[in-house]
Length: 159
Image (cartoon, rainbow, N blue to C red; front, side, top):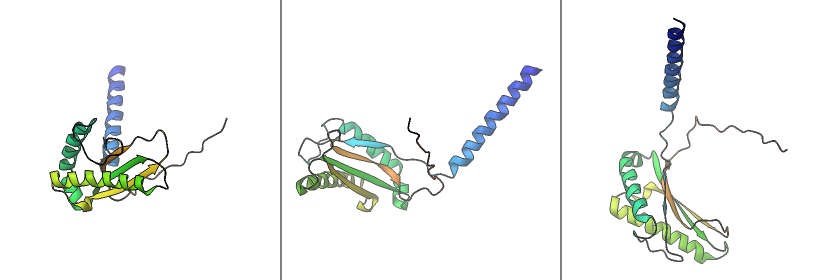
């Protein structure tokens, strides 16, 4: 009898936790932050499908965008493109290279998937960080910030 009572109690707790999780997660937009990395040969802005992991990334990216095309059309999501290039921040040639790479990828997606340029949000990164990985990171992100997902500040203690 005691084991049956304990098992029933555990089942009730598990069900309540699951239902609570379902209630809170349904109010928040489904996260679409799957990120894909597209690489380019050094100093080039030409997109090669066979270069690095591009064929895998482009195939999965296209599939992911096609699944969420309705949310893109409604303005719920944007395709975020971050083009990163190592270089001196004062030189405009590095900024141009980052911009050309972003435009090349956007043009490829527009032509192959038939999507609009309005669906994109582009960011260029040019810096001298030796650990910066050149290329493009692309993914889907909500068009608006989620209002009920507030950040909590946690103080850090120094030892």
